[in-house]
Amino acid sequence: MNEPTVPDSSGTRKPRVAVVFGGRSSEHGISCVTAGSVLQAIDRSRYDVVPVGIAPDGRWVLESGDPERLRIESADKLPSVDAAGASVALSQHVGSTDLVVTEPSEPPRTLGEVDVVFPLLHGPWGEDGTIQGMFEMAGVRYVGAGVLASAVSMDKAYMKVVLQAAGLPVMPSVTVTAREWQRDPQGCRERAAGIGYPLFVKPARGGSSFGISKAHDAAELDACVEEAMRHDPKVLLEVSAEGAREVECGVLQAFDGSPETSVPAEVRVQGEHEFYDFAAKYLPEEATELDIPAKLAPEKTAELQSLAARAFEAVGCEGLARVDFFVMPDESLVVNEINTMPGFTPTSMYPQMWAASGVDYPALVDRLIGLALQRDTGLR
Image 1 (cartoon, rainbow, N blue to C red):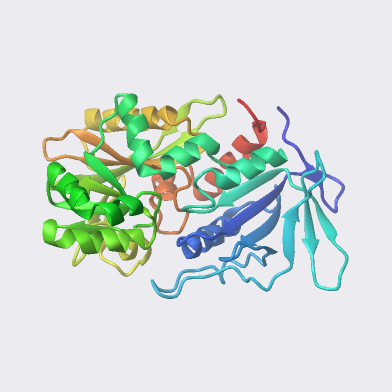
Image 2: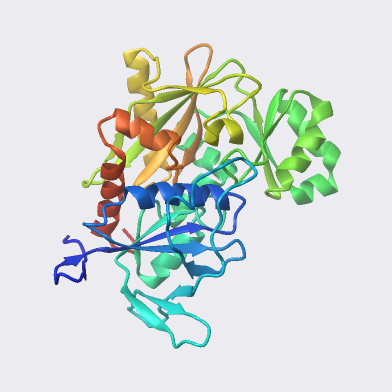
């Protein structure tokens, strides 16, 4: 399939890419940081780029896309979409993929047809299939996983069900909803005790380690559940992989549809961090060490890459994903989770793993846009 194109001032035509970022989830700031990195790397000689921000209240605005403004400064000072910008929306006309801009006291104006959307959204209302469904309804091509794969991968409880059905190993866990916690907290505590402590308590549909804490024993469980439920009314209680190594693997779809895997990378958290929390992930001054490639025996590396590709296909991913593993003390592998839109910040693992595999940042962005341009929306 030929790439759709749009005209530029020279009379030639190139694809128009709407880079969408921000969003309504607690990961709004991280999405902005990710977008800053992509906007800096994208090849403007090949693509006509339109930065579109989604404010925390859900409004879509035309953004400046200045990468410097979107840099991370500290855990309590993350960038945000400028909600004062001109409102922007996809055209409501059937068959049209135009972006329409509306400003106070001005008639609506169009920015022209969008050929592909690069949705750099993390968490609910972006990485969970909701915005992907909107793009499908509008007939707009987009980067990354479709509706079902996004939804399943975002919900860690359902992700485990799908992976187990595909014969992939996962950590034991139980799911607790806010309704269950209010109606029968003791029953929830007994279910937690049934799988054993220590437990990690996680928002079932969150990311960037927001709301995650470790319950070392039953006395700590209630506080951990309450913290997780500040981010999501559905919470996963998962057996801690004690003594395990955390190893990740990037998956990138080839143009023939097959999944390719990167060299794996290991995260080693140092200092006061008991696990790979927000600060360890995103703040460069924090004591996190990375081994790229991970120090694994060749046969273990091959096994991990095979499992990553199987996980990618089990949930029906497209484009890209990062599959996270535990390498247990006995060297067995367990799938921790799948991220269908992994971070693209300067310290993010996904682009670093692909750089070590021979695909640098600009080439990675170009591949993802190319993959999106070659596929149609709808059933496939």
